[in-house]
Length: 341
Image (cartoon, rainbow, N blue to C red):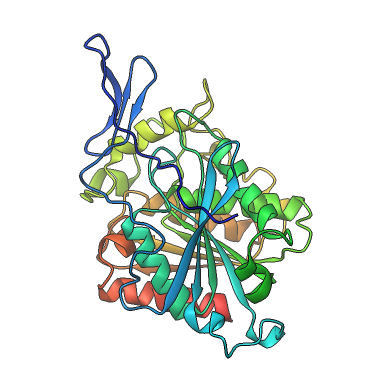
């Protein structure tokens, strides 16, 4: 079902003088003692699906996924696919389908953020693919595993004949990819694990692209990259705030959602699974750098097919914050090759 309007993740409301802030990501998010959350921010903007795509010949629409819980998705498709000269029934015109999960520490972010709209429009055009950007529910109102469940439901939705004409007419659901950045990359990992255990009827997950995945672990000491990083896009103290708000009540950072390698790096059941091939992007100046390198090494030990690209001289989220940089162009090039190999 296409949407004429949709809920926003942000909120602006009045607060009583008796409430105080108990958790905060400066400039983005405040949580108050009464449980209310303020995501109003002057630092980010949301745009409609009809917003221009910065010169890329891409169409986009917002569609409802689950009206009961308010989840929705923004779908991107190259304009040429829906040109009248294209035959809807020709298999040769079908393209890969990418499920994309936005970042934001599970606590903020939106598929409508202008940065994601621009980034994913360019990926859809350059990689010639359909992208389904999922707007999942956020913590602390909806703690994990809600985000995983919402994104999994989006994949199930796409497999249904009633999902959306673009998917059913032009998408090749036997060539689906999971992709995301930061918390969205964390979601991508966990859904890849789920897909190796569950039967997604009519959907074939053939690859996973993880951009600076957001992981952690229970440890008294910080990693070298956590100590040395000066990246303003993700300060080390913010990671602790995000995990406090996102993990199930009472859980610590060795919870599988945060630490997929298990306490002490024991790998859990990862060594017993066969995951789709993984393309991992690690930023040299990122707080997450060392944790992501540990993830790469552990996945190799678990005999998973994984390759990583080190993005030099850049920090967390550079691909949306520096959209015209050489590093972003290279990342998009590598993504397009991975999606179309």
